[in-house]
Image (cartoon, rainbow, N blue to C red; front, side):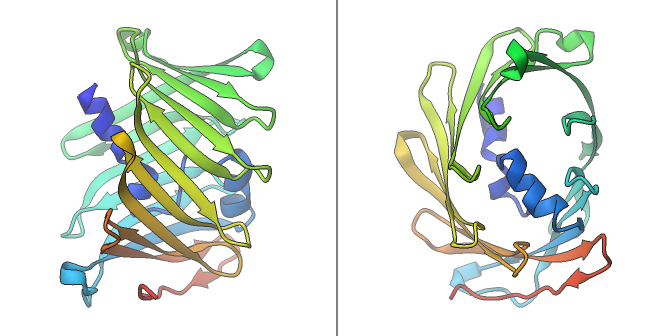
Length: 261
């Protein structure tokens, strides 16, 4: 359980990427498909002693298909070498069915099968491999086909974690809560939005409702994320990631370093 929970702390908002798996189906369509996002490069600037370093470092790469699905992601270490790299394949419904890549010396190759139940109100995802036959993810779907709850069962068939998701009337996610096997809140994310519907801030809390991180995002006129600031629980700035875009229509988005104000 400890290993799984530590992995869970590495949410998409604790990393230097624009993609967020927690977004609703409509959010992903609006942000990635409708904006014709093709490739995104992240550059991260640290803030030693509260001052932004002069030279940022390449930290991430993401590639999307024309349907807005993320088909590739890469993380880079401080020396600019890939530390994690994966590619993804999707079915016609947008479900991620295959994951291929590696991290360090470990080879990653996973394949999943999705089974809708109860007229689509519940979906089970299982590994395609016999050795993991008892491992599964169970998703409860709302009327808009967004995930309202997710439960994970390990290779022994034991429930080890559960997540609940809440959306507003515009199908924007407003909170995600993770529970441990005993029903206790393990961590929680709260989302806020600006007047244009962009996810402008996320507060990440850990057990006992302690604030862990704050993320603040800025966007261009079309709703593409330009930058992401990360703050600690005392609102000290830790880093800034800025993004360079390539779109399917050939246009580029300029990278800017920005500042806290």
